[in-house]
Image 1 (cartoon, helix red, strand yellow):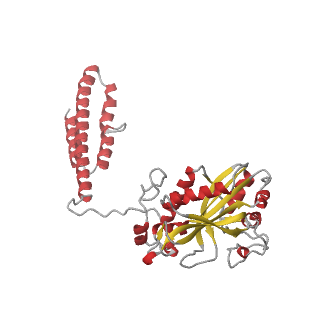
Image 2 (cartoon, one colour; image 1 turned 90 degrees about the vertical axis):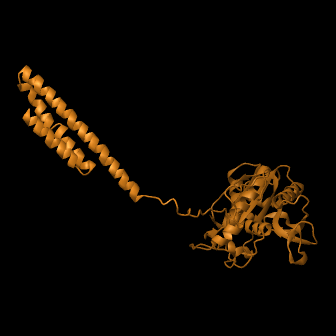
Image 3 (cartoon, helix red, strand yellow; image 1 turned 120 degrees about the vertical axis):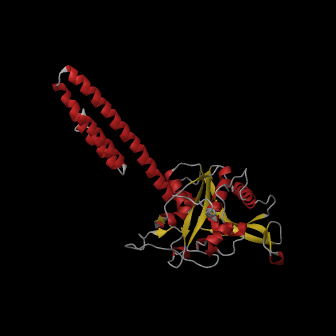
Length: 358
């Protein structure tokens, strides 16, 4: 029994002197583990007579409980000390001023595209997408653009290197190739809009080598010019939020539509201030027309059975007009001050019912 008391004093003293939880765990294993000192003594009970085994067993169980309790108490104390040390390191000075929060803003181009899609989506249009890199046929030939057209020249179009002029790929100059692919891969009727990036060799205050367009296409058996006019008049009035906005259609020419027109909206520039609405001046905002029968035929659509209209608009131009942005180049200068001024909040989601703009 004296040996057990001595072992008790050694183990409890060792427990009290442990400095961290890892060392404490090692001590627990050395005392109470499968090969521990107390476990080894308990294995020797089998060689004793019943009376000795009963007395020694009670003493060993008491020793085991005492050591286990001491280890658990020391573990709780060490964990509390470690937590206090961590909290001391991570202490927060609540008297400091709060850190400024930077809120992101929706870019005017993204917002304008969402506004356009919201209006045309209410009219039943669906979104179509396609590649930014196109072949000559989808970008030019299928759209009835002749080989000598200025748009095919290198001073207007970004060509990728190729083995021959005929096989060279281009950065699409408009989103019309997506309309071609949609008509090739689907069956009429079609009612779709194509928002996306386009590329042309131009750069000044009103032009950029990369810009955004939204084009629309309707093809069915009954669509006519009256539907085109009604659709675009309602779009312009809803987008600019002017119920009686004057809209006129001027005859124009595009290879892929016949007849073709440019759409002007009324405006005034009195006293140096520009305002959209009733006035003595007009401003061109988009092009449109009835789809050229040759384009339908190129896409495998029977022009004797189907007809349709198409339109296209520059997103940056509409954003500049609606929100008073004077220079197109500022859209791409990544100036956070500019974005804070012209940008939109994350919850400014446009809808025809809730309103397009803030």
